[in-house]
Length: 193
Image (cartoon, rainbow, N blue to C red; front, top):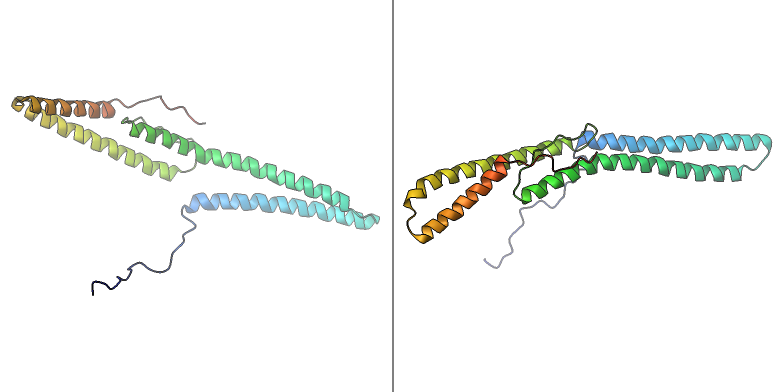
């Protein structure tokens, strides 16, 4: 019986959820669809006018349509490129700021968090990040307080060199935790605006 393979308890199907942040995703899906549809509509209307003019005057109109296609392609590329720049800035800015905060956390510092800019995206994610950041800071403060209490209780009992060395290690740890929690770094992060 021990040689029998165990059956997997996982389902055999995979669910895919494509809309994770409804407001954010639908906003930009609609914007991209609108830019694309608007560009194609303008191109189609202009192409139709050229075709009607060419038919009415008895000309071919192929060269004009070719120029119009090139102009429409470049215009759409420029419009989508500018939109992409604006969109990526609104997303990359908060990601950049949060990565600076994570680097500060990794270095054992707790900087003051500034709010995101008015047009920035990822606001809900930043709120959750801020909550986690505050909880970590609170936990660190509680640990510093617990260390302080333990140090006060043990100060008189450390008589051997090993005990004094251990007490010195705990004192250094307490000092480091207190400095990290009590002295948040302020203006060390530049705005990405």
